[in-house]
Length: 413
Image 1: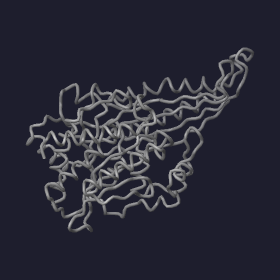
Image 2 (image 1 turned 90 degrees about the horizontal axis):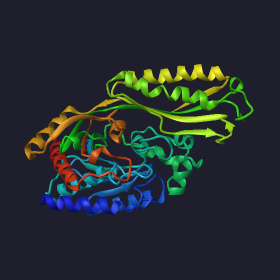
Image 3 (image 1 turned 60 degrees about the horizontal axis):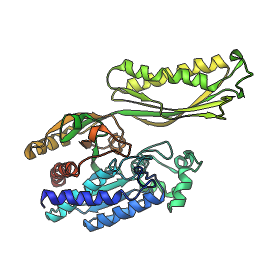
Image 4 (image 1 turned 45 degrees about the vertical axis):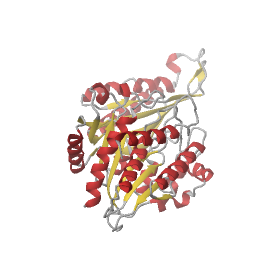
């Protein structure tokens, strides 16, 4: 298969995937358990089958395509990423990794490779956590970390729970635990992804070998005060939830900067209740997202936030709650698979660089328990999670070449 043909197939598939968005002309919005998600899954099923794979959708909304090995009882080699997106996001985040994995499967079939073990292409549901404020739903279900109570707990901004959304989508949340794969059935996991940062593009480097994925903790914080008139309530008699919340929020970035090792902390969402211009806020909700390759740094920042909330809410006579949405520890990726990909880069004369991932991925969830590796392709100007997100199709094709080399070696073991 000529390299130009690989570029063309990847381009055709990704161009078609762009049409499955709730915001045409304003980026990709493909949230879990929506019409757009269903369209994406059905298209992935079609092209997986065309690539010669046995296709199935599981009880969590994941879609898998399997190239059967001569000994399917051996732990499989799994490759893939997610098909959902953020709101008004880019066209490559997540889904390009699924398309590259399908391309690897196509080339294995075209070469007549008869693997010892199964090769499985995975398209995971709801990695982003955009709709329900969680993350890694499909990959977590595959690992047995999601149950019906989890589905009932989390809701979107319209008050719809994962449980309700799954039922509307045509899935039975009471069967979610059937999505778990037997222990030992997955030998390793491989994920290709856009970098979502500027390092590769700025250095004109073709591929990134990811040696570590940062840990993440996410919280929804609710500060409770009392609603009062904005004009008639003296400043020293207020229980202003916004005042207490913002005094804490303003310190969070500096606590991350103090770590001086790439640790980051973000407040990306703030909402006040009742939300009137002339009303002292009764309640202020805000999110906290802390990431680092050092888990102690994450825990220290969360402790500081909690202590500051204790202090500021006591000062106004209020209270607060911190609802943990996600906790995942950092993961170091497989040195063996990284070495194989490095050899492939050298063989094909692709420039490469080792780097960590500051973004979470399905590989972060899976890498907690299964040998895992990631391969990055450049993101133009580092832009991602926005409509201008862009990666050249030829870069995805280069990634598929390296992924194919890695997969052939792993399937032969």
